[in-house]
Length: 361
Image (tube, rainbow, N blue to C red; front, side, top):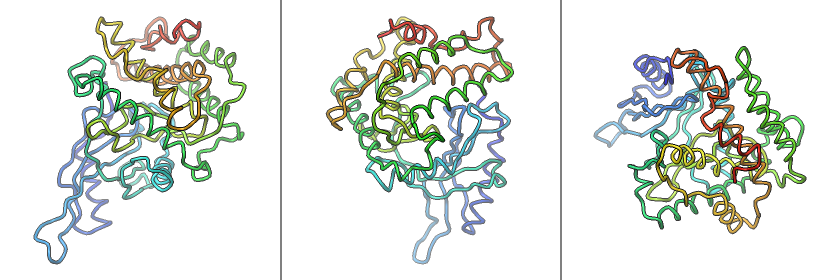
């Protein structure tokens, strides 16, 4: 699929000019746009070369990552890319918790230098469970690991969420919604996103049914409000061995109940597992299960996860919104035709239907 319409060579030239303005002689020694770049903020890997200092014989190299707001000409996945908001969230996480995040270097809110706001951070070495093909299909480091390693990664990942949720809400007050009811604000924002996705396009009866079902399942007590990572899944974590060393992708950060992240982590594994089983492969059925994640989180925090039927349905709904946008994006670029039923653009429509009808779990 088309992920960007930017010219990498021009982007590198503009980045070099920006770096040189901050430190004369600074430039990119290497420059790599990963083929796995998604359709959200763009990631560029580069080595920053800075002039040598007195007493050193060569230039210093610093491995870096550029996070650049989505290309506005590439039918972006989200309507707004607030890079300063992401930057401040990572800052707060680093200052107020032991959650592993990359060291931040610069924030640029002016879109002029690279065509969109961006920030630069240090690059952390590690490995990520693959999305393409999903790790559940096999032939990758995670799938091939021993069951004890799967268990270790699962527990250490849930422990990251437990630690992240200790960040004081006051430190990320800029993420608060307008009403003061964090869960209600979160769902309202998701409804607004849905209406943006279908503006000028066919509506999704399935997603609208899911919103109605959410209202029926609404928690009597959503529980305490915490910092929600937003995109809490193992594909957004760098691992050294089977231990998390960097938590990435903060553009969906918000305030809300703890279960927002737990439901997303549970469901995003189920999304891959369901697809794998539907194509005749076993996947990893005993990995990242709902009961195991809830139990580990309870042991780590003392908080027993609640209303997981609501929160896993909400995760599947949120993912359906993104899938619908991606489908319309493919149609925009001529990569697929518009189907008769817009719900066919939602890869997990079968599981979302089952959740709505209370027969999934």
